[in-house]
Image (tube, rainbow, N blue to C red; front, side):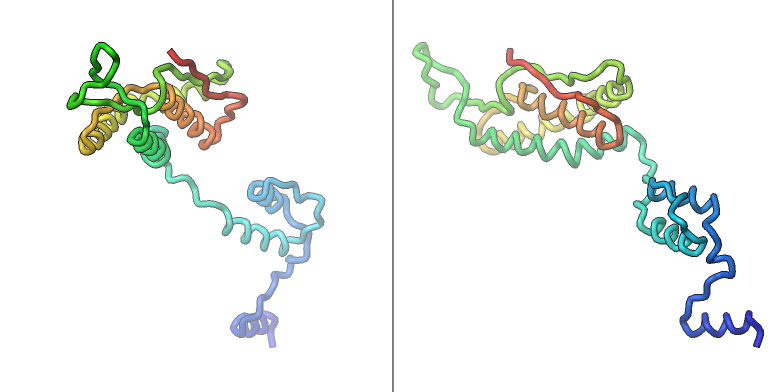
Length: 210
């Protein structure tokens, strides 16, 4: 029986047949592939070609799927809608339970019955910003773009949504971007930058009450 025929019979019966060179040292191409997959140097591990091949197959099957190729703008929009929006929703819902209200009052400071009352969305009035090393231009570019897209595409839409919900509960709402809300938005921009692989260093969100 020829060797080729014997191998064919073994394969047909579920046996794995190694190539003749499987016991030879792993090739430089295999070692480079392993480094790319595992981020580890296998050159001094004594791997054979057969072992390297198995590791490459295993590592390749476990690697995460490639990026969908979404643009930066699309990724920002997705983050705003799926990460930031739920946080703003919670801020809005907490405003319903806020005991502090403002509205038309008499000379003694008592709220006039029957007049519209307002609750604060967020916290006290103020301003928040991201503090970071200005040499990190990429971080600045991405967070600025995030905040620009949020301001231009989402804030007005979200305000209208929240105003409608407040009206359904027969109350008004102070829907300015006061400090607590601003802080949440700026932190979301910073978190997004880090999530796409930008080194944020010691960057953080700071703010002040006015």
